[in-house]
Amino acid sequence: MALAVGDRAPDFELEGTGGRRYALADERGAPVVLVFYPADHTRVCTRQLVSYSRNLASFADLGARLLGLSPQGVASHAAFAAEHGLSMPLLADTDKAVAEAYGVLGPLGFYRRSVFVVDAGGIVRYAHRSVGGMSYRSSDELVAAVRSAEEGKAYFSAPARRPWTK
Image (cartoon, one colour):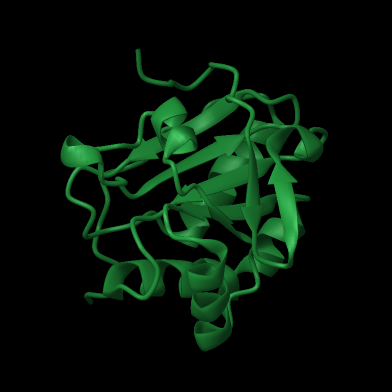
């Protein structure tokens, strides 16, 4: 059964950038945005994470923390973050166990571009799993989802668009 809005978010602990381990349980008391992305150094993932990193202040104003997760190791994440000036932590889900728990593995075991907003109590208030992976949710939409989570409400999104096209 796939993880859905209203479910308790599965806990995890992973190595990440910044030379530390990150545990979802340590984030209780504040909203968390989990950004599952397929791979470091790829076109769409780079645009997505650069966009979110540029808007970290909007999330911080709401007390929310963004965590990026992908199956690459910490060394790859650190190089990716340094090259593109990413300031959000990037976590290494090398065995894809967290992706499996969140239902974001596609056919053949590849990560699907997905985002979850988890409220301060650990409940999923927003969930989006991309089918094609060529688009991503905007920072504005995710900020709105965090605001809804603070009110204890679910946020349901509009269809995705390709943010890099006009």
